Image (tube, rainbow, N blue to C red):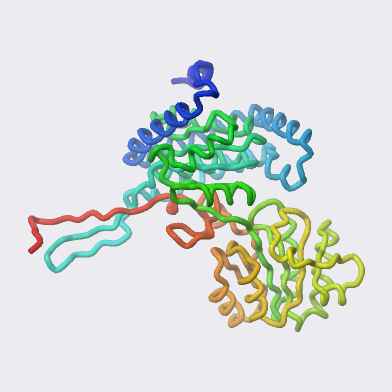
Length: 440
């Protein structure tokens, strides 16, 4: 089927879609189609999946103008509602971001196919040979808000891992997500894979989210939410199936007494201000009292020069004077997703870790130090999904981990933790090979 033929067929199908009053029937059909597609994808050859991914990347680049036109309409509607700068940053697309989406898909092509990989094998005394083998999860449901790039990332990652996916984007990015989804389906058709392998829910009705959280009568195996606190809390409260999620990214930069000042300044500035609206952005700066006199002012001045507002504890304000708002108790547990940073002076690494344990979200935290022992102590004792030494928290990203992309950062402790890439979108089963053994 050519691209033109596919476009005409999709247009015809959309005209015959189920009415809004029959949402339950529509969602049930989506679930059945995804389950059937998942059975095909589970045994699809690696090269077939890669062919689809290459076609997706090519189509994204070819359709850049169409995607940007759709995104402009989404942005205009969002601007009329008075969105914040951080929200707009997550929603906006440009040619470089679309190319980055395509490049991310090409990076996924280059990754090893996890499906069928033997994780472990051993032979029992009775001669049984046992293998633990990676297998797809089945059908993944992804519920997201303002980030249209999730459409491409989730579609590509789930496909490479042999899963079908049901996408439910937010109303604010509906047109952008639909334009990207068209590119993904064109890639599937080009490779001869079922176009229902990557489906997008054709409504912004919130009732559709509830149906997905119920599992669509057993069709969905796992849910991945990408969005704000309200969305994630709803998913975690209502879901009747497993969830890969993090509630917030309350991330910390701890400047140790052995920190290099220039490095600490660069890392803090990047961790906070590179992109303030991403979940890997740092929200709190903790600084060892031993270096307050030398490090605090230069780091804060760099943040302020970049447009960051500072909220400090009493000791921070004593050193810095005017221009620093008092930090409240709520500030230490707030995910700003904006150009705001809370700052606290701590009495060494133990107090820094205690602060992170009390107020953090177990997402991403970093220490800046030239002392290897301090670094090892911090990395061992901070119980977050991602802990770093002398690096920005904004490296909390699947692409930066060499995963090609990710569809979220999981902060739970079961199955997946940290960036959710192709391996995290698989489970395993045991293959047992015998030669006639029976159990006595």
